Amino acid sequence: MKTNKFLVSAFALSIAFAAFTSCSDDEDNSLPPIGGYNSADEVAASSLKAYWPLNGDGIESKSNTSPSSTVATTYVAGIKGQAANFNSGYMAYPSITALNTTSGSATITCWAKISNTKLVAGGPSNISPIFSLTRTGEPFGNLNLIGETHGLTSSDSIQVKGIFRIKKPDGTDFGGDAVNMLKQESWMDATHTWNANKIGGQWAHIVYWYDGPTATNRIYVNGVKISNSAWEVRNNGDAFLLNHFTPTRPVIGALETVVTGANTDAWNAALKGQVDEVRVYDKALTPAEIGALYELEKAGR
Image 1 (tube, rainbow, N blue to C red):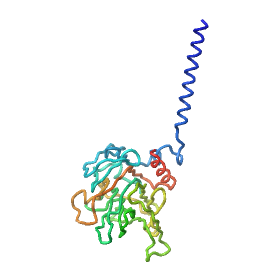
Image 2: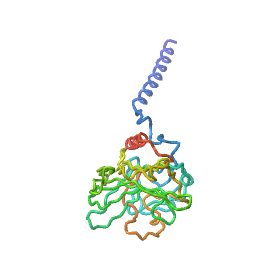
Image 3: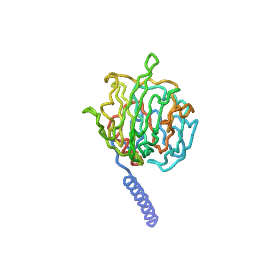
Image 4: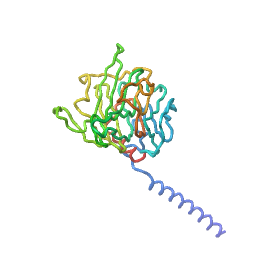
């Protein structure tokens, strides 16, 4: 009996030790929150309308929508898992219901790795389309995020630009853009700002932000606002809520007229570059949310 009692006691002790060890391992492997979040998926989760992880396929995860057209696209190591690699390519999607309506504000976030293709002053100048919510028959859609050269000739010089087009009640459009100036130009006055953010050829977290109540649009890169302050506020700062031309459909890597074959503009070409973690929110994210999203995805979370 003493032997049996000893065996039972030893068995119970081993279970208790295993449980303690397991708990200790869990605690050792846990990661502290960043900005109050454990993963990027928690940031403004209720306002996330579309999300492309781009982990080996082009499926938009919230609606489970696959691209209707894929051109010159492969997959490589990305910022989180895999990323889409475009060789003058794109992925075009059918209309996604959640993206046809809007609260009046929006934020597009993604990671992109693009390089300046204009390496000599007289060389061809192409834009690098990253993401577009299209508008039928027009190259620039409701919301557009692109990189461009703007006369720059060094491989690390990419000017990031966001462009919006809003449908007015009479069917015409109201539009504008936000852009990063990489250096001070001679024509700039004290209202202009610039940021020498040399992101060409490396992964960068890029955010295009539109706030309808103040008709303000901005560009953030790696958690920092970099857009030229003189051109951020539109409509004199009075409200101008997003109202999409419909149907609209998302395209990663090109603008609408390239996808339809109607393009005649030399500057308008499909993307040569890489894109990862594309998210579209139905709100203007706060600076804290943008910073947390950048840090979390950079950490693979």
